[in-house]
Image (cartoon, rainbow, N blue to C red; front, side, top):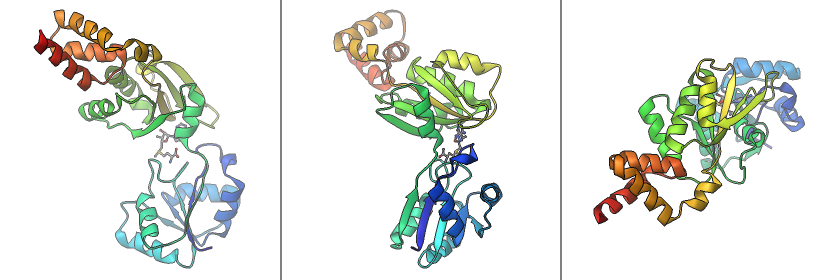
Length: 276
Ligand code: SAM
């Protein structure tokens, strides 16, 4: 059937391509690829020769329009360099426009580093938030982390080796010293998953940035915090902290201790202070 087929490809081990994905690639009329040189290696592994065209969400509008046009009568396959297209990868605008044009859109699910990492981490997987890449500038990174700090969920971040230690330290600062995991080179020869608190992991990687591809998984605020952080406990902790610290610093320390949102705790500290 003509249309758009979103096809997940391996994130390391080429053996992870599904039989259905391989069969579809073999009969595609065109493959819209993030980088045709990368996809050429996969096609060569599968013994296939299929026409490809480069596709990015910031490609010229006309490239996208031409692909959407072709979907009316041809099988157009979307792939990214590795894993599931659209997940920190191009494709969202192509899917949006294909839907708007009434084309048949379907997906062939498969490898995704975020999902693989949460399964490896041993951290709660019943509720998690995929947070993509953190910004590299310190202020923007801290602001982004603050947006996630109140969530009772595991958090999943994509990361690179050189930025890993700084990101782990910023996460410890903004979220409290939670349990975390660093999953590296998933499905490849040097696959590993190192667990510890954010501070322990930041120290471990400070002098030796690891090579390869990395996912950070951060656990939710601890159960102990959830149980102990009733109103009376929080207020007592805030009063104690405010005795020898300015309000903002006291709120930050208490938020970190209980794994709570520092803006909410700051507002609570101000109320307490006003009440005397
Ligand atoms: N679309 C891909 C997916 O489904 O996972 C992700 C693309 S994103 C541009 C690339 C990032 O994914 C890397 O920087 C790394 O954080 C993560 N990643 C990809 N492959 C990985 C692997 N084998 N092991 C660990 N992380 C990986």
